Image (tube, rainbow, N blue to C red; front, side):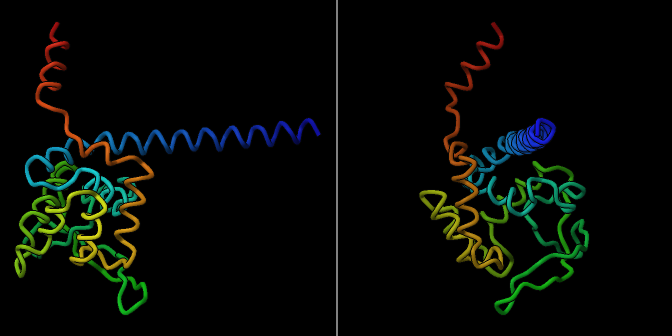
Length: 193
């Protein structure tokens, strides 16, 4: 009985360590790309919470092949004239999930991916430069997430719900409030002292 209790206790301890490691990895991922998401907010008006949630959802916390090897966090498609890679992807078509080969954009860094994603939302696509303007005009992350789905950003019919859940579960809305210039100056001043 003692041995069984010890084994169960050890298993719980291992699960706890795995959970802590997973949480740590996820926090590190968010901390890594949050500055780029906040820069994209300043430069293009894309809410950091939405940018972060999309990166998490689309790249599986930066662990997908597309994100880890090709630095594409958002599943952004490419033309043949852009740096690209062809990979299998799941799409929701005619009420069912199918696997297709998609041509995806390749970036030099995650920061480049975040900026390119913000540019896509700001400038739209060739056939509709205003496609994502409602995303930029949204007053909050819930409106922005719904605007992304309404604009057809992803084929997943529950995309907006998934983004909102991700934002709330990981409190990503905290990144929508940018540090003020005064706070930033104080941080630099105190570092120099």
